[in-house]
Image (tube, rainbow, N blue to C red):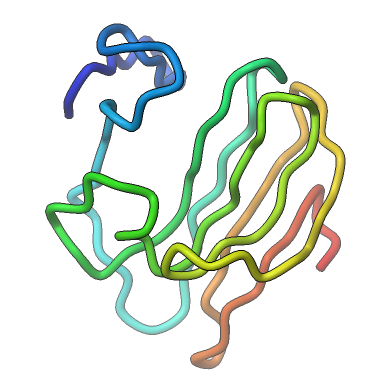
Length: 114
């Protein structure tokens, strides 16, 4: 972890500069077959990414294979390997986003809907 802290089930940026890609957290868990990562934004005024990667040293958003990008203005979209893939949607604190691998295919969900 770099420039972040965990408090209960909340991951929060605690250092670095505002708007800079200088905070990371990488899980030690690995998917084998089907699985997912799930998260919920706690605020709408910060720019951030969350997703899945095969790398253990991913420090930048373009290192992530599959991600949601939250733009800090209540809008999110899908990014794969640093490339915009669509899926534009609004969001609010408490919305639940999930990136799932099901039968070898990636699914993006918001509040349970594909």
